[in-house]
Length: 244
Image 1 (spheres, rainbow, N blue to C red):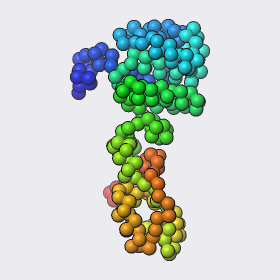
Image 2 (cartoon, rainbow, N blue to C red; image 1 turned 90 degrees about the horizontal axis):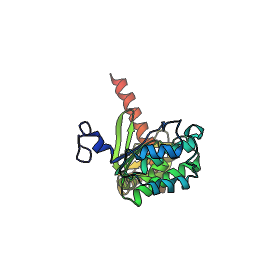
Image 3 (tube, rainbow, N blue to C red; image 1 turned 60 degrees about the vertical axis):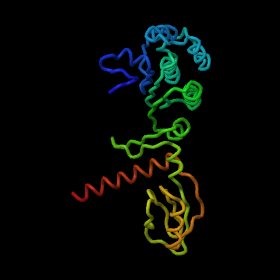
Image 4 (tube, rainbow, N blue to C red; image 1 turned 90 degrees about the vertical axis):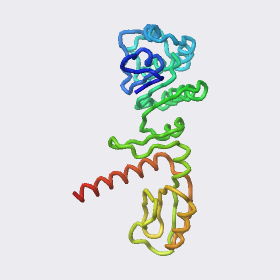
């Protein structure tokens, strides 16, 4: 394995200087003040940009004289983010960055991440269960369920290939219609909702042949895609277990 052309085991210092990391638990020393923590962290990073750190402190309305142990959960997350980004890392790794935070604080943190991506052209890898925010930030998405990759694609391709259809049949359907490339189907009677992967033209043609029509069509949200794929994976696991 090579990270930035270096062996991370043999030369960890060379690799770590390129990386910023924000953990989910945001474990930072309680006994330091914010200012002391900034100075302590900057000693490990030659690329530390104090003016950028000060700008973020001002954006988050953080007092450098305050002790970390007196900070709220939201404020600790803001401080931890500054420590992760102020040395302008080439790679920023965020583990559930907005998890459990106030909505306003979460927005401020994500805005800082967006700036890192858009203005500075850096790479950000982050894990999150808040899929609306993933849609806002990511250009490539990997979905993982129970340790298995269920989807790995650019966000653009996911949007192009996944649609949500509201469909209507001329006659009552007593069971979910069998539709190729439908990854989720719900509804009853004449009215059904389908999450579909693939060509919309072929789907419309197949639907017409079995007495159905598309009433409404839109791109599926990332959350709808994830829930549909997770449901399909769970059903697949149950089928495998049942066949043993």
